[in-house]
Length: 253
Image 1 (cartoon, rainbow, N blue to C red):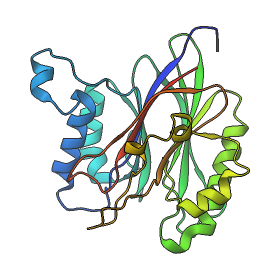
Image 2 (tube, one colour):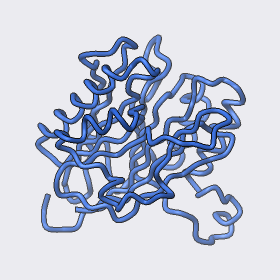
Image 3 (cartoon, rainbow, N blue to C red):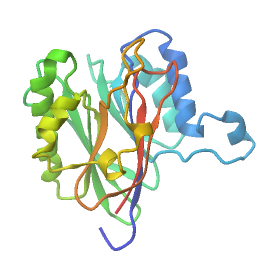
């Protein structure tokens, strides 16, 4: 990176795509929220709307959501997608979308070393207009209460990928980590948690809520290598879209 300040606005969202109820209308609403800040009339009238993220990572993507809503709407909004089409025979996968001033240089999908549910993680490289590159990693880590051992192993694997990156790196995704698991991990974890860097804002502490329960859990996280600062962090909860909220960060270095 040169001495120019680099900014990256990133959004991570588990879309709950495996829940097939009203998936089309739900994804339409999510795309509207992302592309015009949820306020179509304001956009049409030229009034200010929230900024559009430059990099988005979606978890629990499915063929129906990908081809029916995400691909046409995001491509129309100037995004490049990976994968461009649903992977053969796959449901519940991760998708990355990138728009100017960033471009997608490369991306691949890797198998976790330990995953009873055969989970994978995505590793992508994005490049800014000044030539600076950032590695973006995303995953939908092991689910289920019984998956704690696998979640911890997967988080450690991601931490190693971030630490070994030859360019600044960011992880954003659904970790499914319980508080006790994170407490065990945090002691030796090299990456920094963006939530903590941002001052642990209470309004952004929960990202997933069990059905009919007011208590939320911080499953969706953003981890950073050294050198990043967090200019903004907010949780984007959309009623009747997903049981997860999105986490949006504006990162600077």
